Length: 190
Length: 190
DNA sequence: ATTATCTATAGATCTATAGATAATGC
DNA sequence: ATTATCTATAGATCTATAGATAATGC
Image (cartoon, rainbow over all chains, first blue to last red):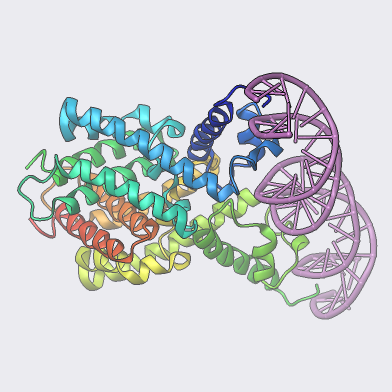
């Protein structure tokens, strides 16, 4: 082999991580494989020995981004509970760096237009996130997973709105209003 | 002129409405002008006498979709208040027909990546929707616009999630959980 | 004569494939 | 000999432009 053992796996991992960032920052449809590959320091043609299609890369990228998110979520939950999750998720920092942030906030409508394979990957990882959240949320609620789902939807919708509006002051207002709502829903404030 | 007076305006309007539907159902980046024009019964080259660029069409399409949404919202609010809005927004019908539905739910991350012009158009129309909603929401809240913003974010995020997951049963659960949350937030249930 | 639309095309980019290259392990 | 990557390219599609066409109003 041209490069040492494990080199191919390293390339594959690098492609996935770069794609996960580009997809989140520029959108899935708007991101070409050529750009991903050149960012990874490789050429166009080296893509297909790693993945059978762009769709395959999309699935792997979504999985990768959401696994990272799951680890982060665990840490923040342990450190400061739901309160801290809401603060971090709806921070100006997260709003201003979509490429490193929540895949759902960056990609959800596009994921909804993907094939079943990618949507299945998304569904599994979403459920994992929601279950992590559910353990810290709506302690007196009948359906804690339902509360977690809705809280996550609120966070995600809020972040998307804060990213889309052209007025920075309004964007900050949206973050605050969403955080209040998420606290009410999750039961941090009763 | 080849066609009677007002014919050009009619074509322009048709292009905008078809684009507004295609963008919402297939995504902005994934929709080519050729497809829009052929759906409108015109050829590629007839696009540019109507719009100076694809970006210009995007702005007009977002505005068109949101003006329609505003009219619908007014009707539903008058007929059944926030309760009815939540039910209609989170209905399986709305979930299953993104092309005719909420532009925010279908396009928000992509709108966030557009230029200032489109984001300004979006911002103005979002504020109009939010103000309509605010008049019927959080009657005892200090910041009713904030409550309306968060309620809308919850609806939108919920619909996106319900569209993206691959399991129909989970999708229905998401709609229900989101509706409960929106009712709590908006003050329909205290 | 005017003008809404059409035909034709430029030039860039897209996903995907085929075959060549070159550095390693044997 | 194997194989990770490269070069080169096919074939489709993208946005955008230039000039031709044809049906109307004058």
